[in-house]
Amino acid sequence: MAEKVIVGMSGGVDSSVAALLLKENGFEIECLFMKNWDEDETCPAAIDYKDALQVCNTLNLPLHSVNFSAQYQELVFAHFLKSYRSGKTPNPDILCNKEIKFKVFLDYALELGADHIVTGHYARIEKRKNVYHLLKGTDSAKDQSYFLYLLGQKELAKSLFPLGNMKKKEVRRLARKANLITHEKKDSTGICFIGERNFTQFLKKYIPPEPGDIFTIDGNNVGIHDGLMYYTIGQRKGIGVGGGFGDKEAPWYVVEKDHEKNQLIIAQGHDHPSLYSTTLKAVDLHWIHSDSSNLPETVTAKIRYRQDDQSCTLNTENQNSVFVHFEKPQFAVAPGQSIVFYDGEVCLGGGVIDG
Image 1 (cartoon, rainbow, N blue to C red):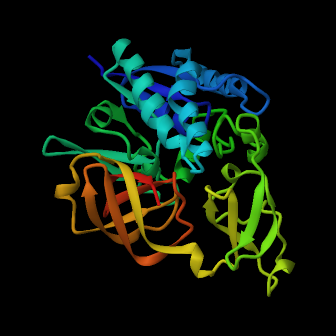
Image 2 (cartoon, rainbow, N blue to C red; image 1 turned 135 degrees about the vertical axis):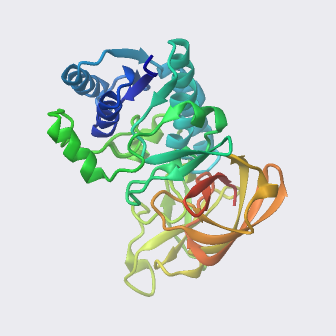
C-alpha cells in the first residue's frame, strides 16, 4: 500500500512542485490549503486558493481547505503583538511553523490518516542512528532551516521536504514542464498578515503610538519618535533624521531603545561601533536532537535569515539560556529575533535573542 501524505498547498510554486514530486514517486496524495489570516485587501487568500486549486486540478489531486485563523490569532499573532509591546522584534514566521504548520496542520493531517505531511521548505531531514536531524537546504540562497529550528523529533519524523536537495531554478523548470500555473509566480515576501502594506501603519492599528525623544549616541536631542515598538535595532529607514544633523552626510541607525525614558538612541554611519556586538544572551532555547551538554565546542550561528554562518562559542547559563561569544562583531543584534545554531550543515536548534 502506498504511503499516504498530505501536502500543505500555499498557492506558490514550491508547494506545487513538492506535490508534483510526491505524485511522481507513487505516494497517495491529498492536498490541503490553510487559511491562517482573515481575508483583507493585502492578504489575498482567495487568489492563492484559486492557484492551489488549479495546480491540483492539473495534477489530478484532491484539495481540501481549512481555516486555522483562530489558532493563528491565539498562538502566533497574540505573541507577535506582546513581543512588540515589550519593545522586541519577533519573528512570527518561525512561530507559525512551530504552532500552525507543524502542530495544528500536522495533528489535523494525522487525524485524517496521513503518514507524513509535506511542505515546500528548502531544508532536509536525515535519520541517523534513530535520531532525526534537520539539515540546511542544498541551495544556500534558499535554505530555510533558520525558520524551522523549533521543530523536534516528532515533527521531523512525520514531515517530508522534497525540495531540500533542489535549487529554485530547477523547481521553476519542473513547474513549467508540468504546465503548473504557479511556475512564474512571484515568491511571497514578509508575513501574510502584513503583506505589502506599511509596517508601522499596520502596527498602529493594534498598538497605540507613544511618542518620545530621539537622542544621538552623544546625547543630542534631534527629533521625536512615534513609539519604540515601531523601530528595531539597526533600522535605517523611517527614523526621520537626515544626515545633516551630524558631522557628515551619512545615514542614521537605531542603536538602542531606552524603555525607561521612552527614548530612541541613534548613531551615524553603518560602521559606528555601537551597532556591533561580540556577545549576546539567548533564551527560550530549543535543541532539535540533543541538549546543551552535548554540543560541539565551537558552532556557527545566524542572527537573521540569509546571514552567512558566524563562528561562535557557547557558554551555557542554564537549561533555558546561553551566552554566545562571536569570533567577529555582529551588526545590529536585535532582541526578540532568533539566533539559530549549526554544526556544519546540521541545524542544532536555537533561541530568542534577549540582549
